[in-house]
Amino acid sequence: MARVQLIIPDDDRDRFMRQARREGLSFSAWLRAAARDRLEEQQRVRRFRSREDLQRFWAECDAREGPGVEPDWEEHLQTIHESKTRGLPDV
Image (cartoon, rainbow, N blue to C red; front, side, top):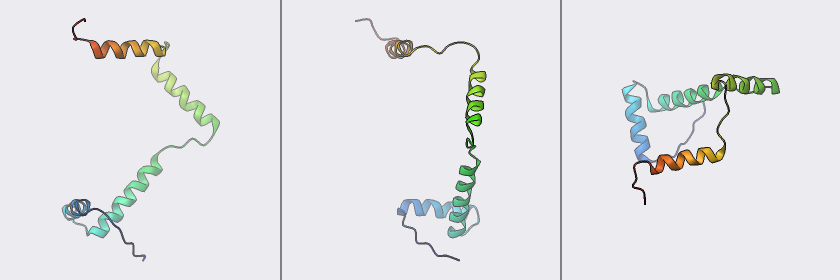
């Protein structure tokens, strides 16, 4: 088994150790479990493997949004401006 030296801020170490105790694990076991959880989470991310995967993704996005056309950039800016100035006195 390999030994790894880890340099972390004292506050993080204290928080991690408290959590490890709450979970009934040693600090080392808790860190290994946290690292495994992170790896598993990253591996669950679906990757595009082909051009067809990407096209299917965009088709699903379009279908979810429904019919219609997205406003152009000027309309977005106007909406943002109106939102910021709503309720302010006219000057």
